[in-house]
Image 1 (cartoon, helix red, strand yellow):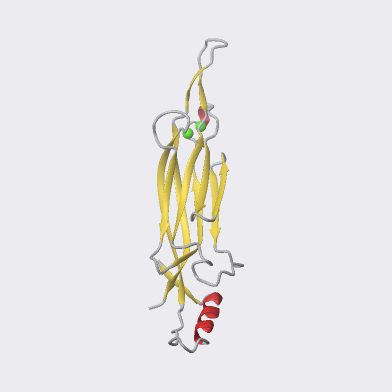
Image 2 (cartoon, rainbow, N blue to C red):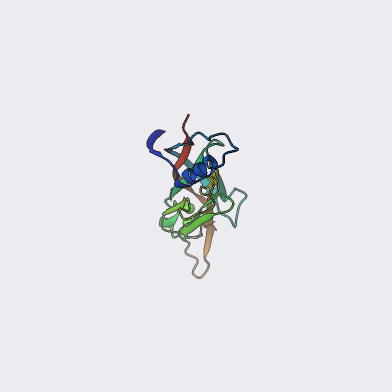
Length: 182
Ligand SMILES: [Ca+2]
Ligand SMILES: [Ca+2]
């Protein structure tokens, strides 16, 4: 975890100015935030969603303390289909990031997905909460398809095979958040 530049949200300045103009209230000390970058990773395995009993979805929470606010979350998912060389259809994964209100998602069978969820800089909600992603988002990984793998048999037109049981994946998450200065 490392501190980056001191960042003061324009919206906060507007809010602080509005409070200062209200003579009945005590002066509000300027509230400043520092932007912090952090990361986490997850290596997992997901099963075939259509066969078997293993989970085909994993949810990884990205959470910061209550007084802090996430402004950007980027997730990169990579995988190599362990059965592709045996003729199995490529495994398809879906990657989603959501905070319950906003979400981004993408899917691919090419072994890599990148999805970002960022604060809406055009937000005019007037508060840090409405201009941020909140203090928790979920990164959700789904194995959508794993594929049927034909087994080579000399039985003419009889095609035997098995379902690809699933696949390993690696997930790297980078996120930026605003932390109130002490
Ligand atoms: Ca496969
Ligand atoms: Ca596989």
